Length: 386
Length: 126
Image (cartoon, rainbow over all chains, first blue to last red; front, side, top):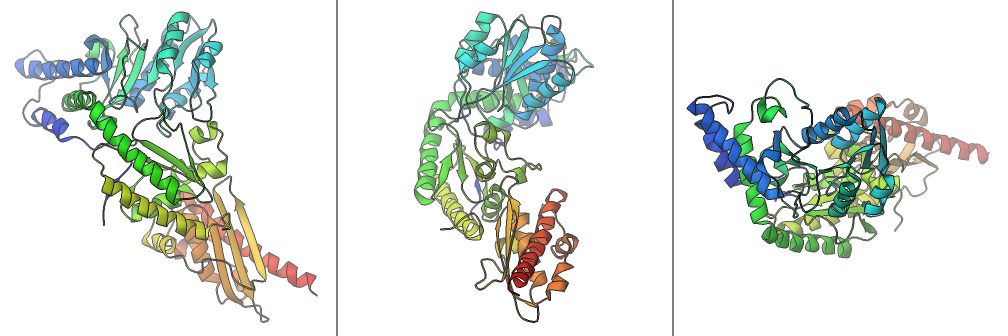
């Protein structure tokens, strides 16, 4: 049976280059980067090289990069840290209804502690407008946190315009760019981004490692306490091998972006055209063009997402869904609901996310499996009367 | 996450589809929650469920529990079928993940709803 991985928004495969760059730091260089001796210094120089690679990839300075345990920690650090740091200046935070839970949950926690959070509504494609952000800013607003690109539907937010507005109003602007970095051009200076979260395993780096960009001049308290690492901004001995792997992966992702984007767009269009021509009554979720090059998300009417995933999985195709049944709750994806989808339609969503190593043959195979799954499930559905 | 038995009933559902000449039809659940089960039964004069069928909108567990429930009541008297519990459905499937137990409850309710409908129709025809 063919095995086709179409869940690259969940995680990507570690690249050969990233793995090879990590190996010396798993086998030979075992020093603690904080140590004074040569063993430590060797590890330190590898960490600092990776810091430069990450900084270069997003147009930042190396000293503006803090290594973290991943995107979730980066998001948490910004939100909890800003609240603590600026609580005397204000208690209002602006975000959107479609953020990742790594942003939404700390925001909800802050609400319990007396902060006020505005969750901007999104349009039918899952985007907010710069005007909405500007209208929501008040005298007591201390942070605007808006994702760069949505993890479920791939919609890209107008980050540069939002950055400009935040700069104008002198409000800190953070973006969760976990799905964007390495996939679309990101430049923190040009886009007026003050803080940015990224995660290595979304661009063929290792899991459990990420970074937080914090613009020079902004000082956030460390979420993790217990050491002076990362200039007191994140305690804990650095995961040297993973940091090195992230550096390699991000450099490669940016260097190959144009090429891989073209490849993925071709595959994405093949997949989208296939779905729309072979399956009736489907709805594309997210914007047709203003979306990540690797993201395909459809609602397939009259059936439920987990059933689709199960059929795909039994035939070797890995995908994901915004159905409630895959989240462990009774509600389908908060992103799809925020975009105005009814529960029924949201339950029937399937997300297929590509990498540049997918092939046309794989896409055609996945289409065959998907079409068969839909036919089987619709024949079973009391909602389908065709 | 699912047992072999669940996957088997999901991939090869038993008694799927409407039953011609059904004299009891029940529908439970709602699309909002992501599960709808429709159960069709054809009961003979001896009150034995001769034929049974289902249609389900829902996850893998919803489909598998519907399929198993039809197997468990086929050929039974309606009184016996009424004693079907969700636990029996879960047991026959060799277990369900905790978040999917509600699917088995829905299957039990679908059976009861179809039998209710059968009885109501019988009452009306007296």
